[in-house]
Length: 236
Image (cartoon, rainbow, N blue to C red; front, side, top):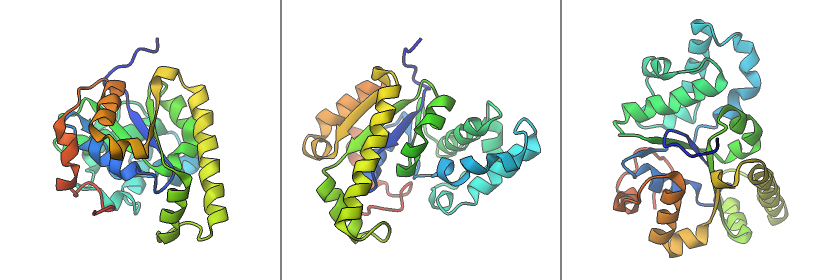
């Protein structure tokens, strides 16, 4: 059964400086969608989960949750996730369940009437096999921007390589990784969006995205710039 349900998550993939924050802020402005600031949870802790022991044991889950909430990325979330709410939100006692509990717990704390939760961390594209195994019904929304613009933006950023050859190499590797993901997941669970199309034809592209997610387009999505709280980047 590959039918899409509203409570299935969506993962926003895209190379750094490709418009992932812009798209996520637009989505988070929808009254029924919650997408927090990037978490990088899989990148930071997935490989270390064995050191927490059996996650069926509440104490071990609580330790993992506490360590995730203390990461630099989670410190930028507004409002900060509440540990007790996260623990109460976890429905399955594995790494994916903890990950879901953190984001859904944040959405509830944020007061969102959420029927769909999402997550965007550029680094998570490299963990697509682990993510799709944990969330087989998840949708992947990939935003891709002209590689020359990505390279110029990254060259000015405070992170990443600073020569165009390495920046172009990064962009190509990222696209190859996402192409692997798009070949593996069911076609109706993957949508690619060009950054340029999102900027030049915003309403039409957001309507397409909403139909992909199974929700109706809302004009609130155009008011994303009025609420900077959930995101600490891209002030303009």
